[in-house]
Length: 107
Image (tube, rainbow, N blue to C red):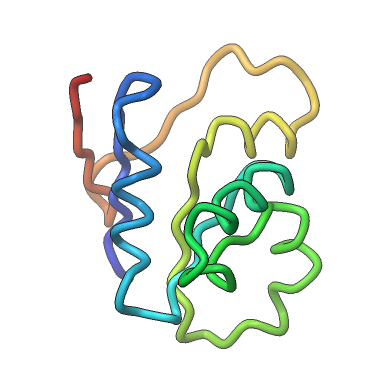
């Protein structure tokens, strides 16, 4: 199993920018966004990477069409989890180690 890099950073600290940099140079990488409006915004701002931005809803409908070679990155994961659960979330846990690596950034 490949490692999952979990980035913990304040709002407006460059997380999305770092994820876009990760996309470059590998067309098998996909960045999932929490909604279509965000995917459209990123496509508009990154015309050379248009096919690599996908909303959560698009991903759910197209995931079976993607090859197993695709690598997926999730921007604003907490928003997607809220959409999935559709109830207030007051606590979450995630095991560190076991393939999850935490990277912290300050503003």
